[in-house]
Amino acid sequence: MVIEQSLMKSSKMQGSFMHGRSTKENVLTKFVVGLLSASNISEGLENFCGLSFASEEKHVDSWESRVKLDQEDVKKLSKCFCAHNLFSYVQMIMSIATGFTSNMETINC
Image 1 (cartoon, one colour):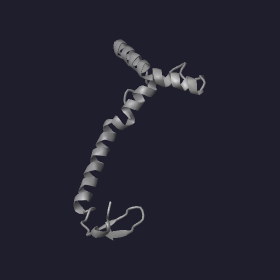
Image 2 (cartoon, helix red, strand yellow):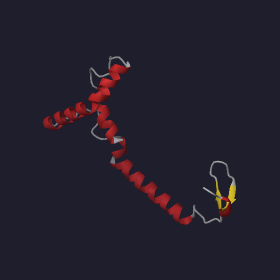
Image 3 (cartoon, one colour):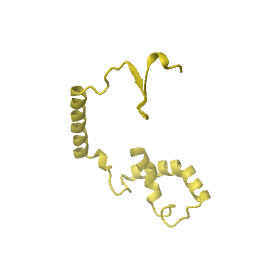
Image 4 (tube, rainbow, N blue to C red):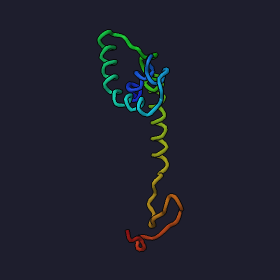
């Protein structure tokens, strides 16, 4: 997510294909080819000037409150997985897609 935001940040600036330029294949190809270089230049300028041209410094998923909620959710899931064995041992093979079952001797692949 962070990589995508870093690369797409320059596309939202004035003069990019999202602001008045054509979406024809040749325009998009030039954009994609130059995206990494433009992103590096833009990031270098931001670092040099000590500025951020983005609307926000951080993505919502990196906010402290969101990280805390995610950690709590991981703990809840971990407790659930420890309490309920989701992968019980069975003596046959079952297709998840169809539900068909077979014993080990009939499988020949």
